Amino acid sequence: MNELLQKQKRYFRTGETLSLKFRLKQLIRLKETVKKYEQMITDTLKAELNKSPFEAYTTEIGIVYEEIRFVTKRLSDWMKPQRVSTPLTHVGSKSYVYPEPYGVSLIIAPWNYPFQLAISPLIGAIAAGNCAVVKPSEYTPAMSTLLKTIVAEAFPEEYVTVVEGGVDVSQELLSLRFDHIFFTGSVPVGKIVMATAAKHLTPVTLELGGKSPAIVDQSAHLELAAKRIIWGKFLNAGQTCIAPDYVLVHEAVKQPLLEKMKRYVDELYGNPDAYGRIVSERHAERLVRFLANGTVVHGGAYDIEQRWIEPTLLDDITWDDAVMQEEIFGPILPILTFETIDEAIQMINDYEKPLALYLFTEDQDVQQQVLHQVSFGGGCINDTIMHIASPHLPFGGVGQSGIGSYHGKASFDAFTHYKSVLKQTTKFDIPLRYPNFPHALKWVRKLLK
Image (cartoon, rainbow, N blue to C red; front, side, top):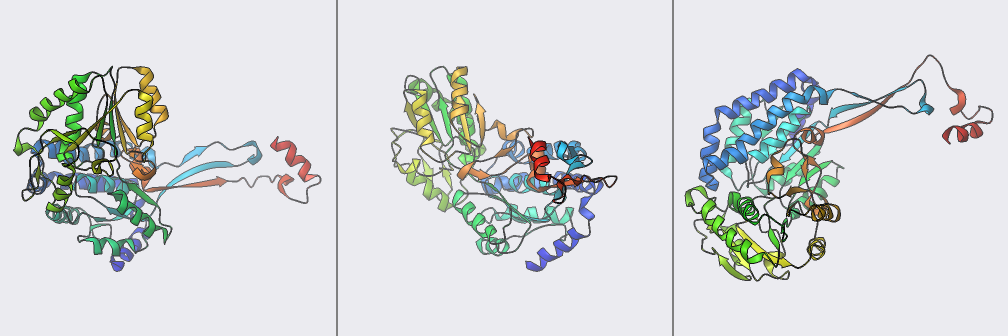
């Protein structure tokens, strides 16, 4: 693997990846190759995670197409050096910021959206002019192999390649001196990645997770709140980093909301053929243990061998229950209540900063209060999930939910170092900065005032 890294570093140093023409050509080539394998991608997602063709396209393939379209249309402007202001103290000079690629980036992708979460960061790496090694998840081996096939057909190994394997392979890759590491996964593994990267002072982008709340106050449009929360939660069988992890509902509207949520579970996810599977039996066993918490008010059936857990709503939950101690990452939705919005905010702020937050309210004051008093990566007002699908919105966490962001321009930025350059004139020289200038300190003080 070190030989592979050195091969990519040598290729990067040739400067081949730096031109706009080259980058655009590679992005177009990537899109064409994905189109060629689109049906195989869909079939593989169905086989490993039971994703329907609709869900496969909307949450994995279509997002990649849109990201490439968005980036290629704007890349020329992003790559240009930017002239910035120069202070009076620097008279005669001009200031610029030059975007340059880090070099060779390592992209470690997860299993829950195994195609999209491997390719989306790669789009940013290519757009910024980097070489890249992509490490897909071993939990979705068929998709990992397919990704290797797609990338090998689109790019030479010295430019972009896929490395398959388990934890030992990830550890070996992380031990090497990459120029940048982009990791998507859990908080515990994110800490390991960051600690390993620190040995080489390698910059990192960490897309992690956390317990993302959905707040529903008494002014909310309950019908849409129920529908959108259920859709966002049970998409991909709840295996989404920004899925609503729990519901905080005003006690006055809890019961009507709960009844509507039950109905939408059946309407949206009642068809087993269109409902996802848990990635492994081990993950299913972990999730089933949460079913002992509180009271199951809807769902609760499961088949560990088939990696299937029915969309489940849990009531009578307390903050001390096991289901509230870690990110659920599965089709189980706990429901808690609050009396005032101040109380709800306090509950959320007592825990780590969430990756996402969803607020359902028609009250503008409540909207502003939550936005100003709760720190979270990103989110929606009166919706769930949809902020991730906008290339105009940077996507990322804060605190333990992540470091850095991507999507659209933010993807270019994630893989780019911005180099500051001052160009000084040689037509004259201002003597004031030199220590032998008479009364230099006096004049400098006056100027800086």
